[in-house]
Length: 433
Ligand code: GDG
Image (cartoon, rainbow, N blue to C red; front, top):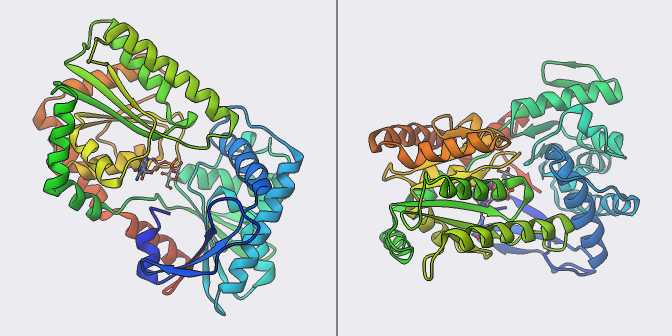
């Protein structure tokens, strides 16, 4: 939603989305910050089966290289169908004749086909924010053909990466025997296009926020509160097992233990925003991360001087911007990530052209942010080496890298993402679901 807000406001679109919380009925539609909101309710059972179950314990891990074992349960599947039908119904109800509906993400993969059936007059786009797995992995999905047919209800299916789009067209041939030419699949005579549309951020907004004197002062204050260390290393993620938080902590611990880094010259700040707390994988992860933080602080901290400042909390956007400005090294080390907006936010926030980004090759952002310190998150020594290079990079070299990445982002912001997708869909005016 954060990424789509400027797009929706600009196009005066209607947002058909979860009302938040558990309830049988949704509030009446309303307007908020230039956007028309049409809430859809989810009951407590939907939350458990559709959202926490099918979406976040089956599809999420399966599409992220099965870095955690996907859980398959039949009753979750039925709930996924029901909720997708509810969203399709709501979109069919609010969309004007011939309108465009843009369906977002893995929780709604059946919606394009359901919507096409109800409203063949609509133009339908779908964007997947997370990776799309290779055929071998996707084939584990119990109702795989139904999901694929659901997606194929769209006119245009957008992915973060070219490879994901390729996985998809190959899968359509493999599973349903559909023919394709380039990225266009022939679905019973109807062309369905797959393509890569790497998402981005509101770059100008982040630059403005980071330049705000209040944010700059807060950044200085954060550094002072940390004891004015030489090097502040930062991580900002939802507490999710795909984000590689543990491996990053381990790299830091080993560098302290090797004597390559020391406290208090170097400190680490890890913001781990609470996420999906009722899903078991996430509960286990929290225990592991907190154990590692405890271990590092136990071994390398002193009274009043922790080595890792661990914050299992949510922050305001301005506080995040201040943290970005305060950090010498940003660590973004996912095992697999569709894009990773934090990496882009950090680069955009560093208009002072300081700072260094350590970035996993397995984040979609790595395709674009080539001047970061890239690493393979599966190789602990590689991660340590990238972190050390980022810590010791000379200032002119750091500035050169940052500037090149900033130049790229200024022309590839979230507006560019939305326009590219919608242009490809052939739309001047849009409704976004
Ligand atoms: C999915 C895909 C893809 C984080 N903590 C706080 C907070 N955040 C904001 C960040 C950033 C966003 O949340 C996280 O975006 P990411 O891209 O890093 O990761 P996912 O949540 O996994 O997003 C991902 C994305 O969709 C978009 O397509 O890039 O690959 O997994 O904007 O700044 N925001 C606030 N307080 C926090 O504590 N306000």
